[in-house]
Every structure is written in structure tokens, then in C-alpha cells.
Length: 99
Image 1 (tube, rainbow, N blue to C red):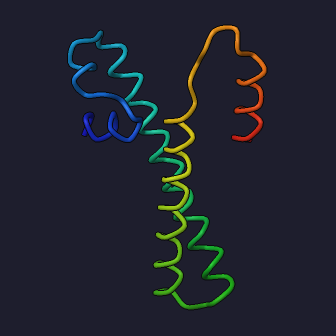
Image 2: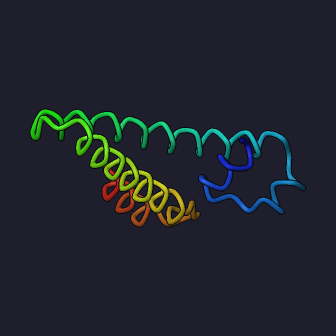
């Protein structure tokens, strides 16, 4: 499970094997937060579609689609956000895009 969470967070498993346990836990926590956000997307999307269409089966399918969409977008944001020194303006723009 920990390797799956680390993959979701975009970590390199070969590098993590050689690193400190704290780094492995950090990437596992990032992966878990992405999964939690996706699960919340499934629930909220499913509820919204059920409220709109009153069809449980299509609401479930659309809710899962919405959760996968959230999963991919959140993972993309995490993978493309890099911490760089002396690039404060770029970090602010990336943060605003995420919000």
C-alpha cells in the first residue's frame, strides 16, 4: 500500500528505497491526501449527479468519473509543482493556479 501511495505522489521508488524513512512517509502522506481528495470528489460528484438526475446507477458512474478527474488533476498539480530557490514570483503564480 505504501508503494502505491508513493507512486500516486510521483515519487521515484528506487530513490526512496535509498532515502530516509521520513521521506518515504512524506510521499505516502502526499499520496494519501490525493486519494482522500479523489474520494471526496466521488462522494460530492455522485451526490450532485443524484440530486440532478435521480438515477443511482448513472450517478455512481458519473461520481466515479468525477473522482478520477479530480485524482488526475490533483496528481498533475503535485507532480508539476517544484520548489526552487529565488523563484518567489513563479511559486506565487503556481499557488494561485492551484487555488
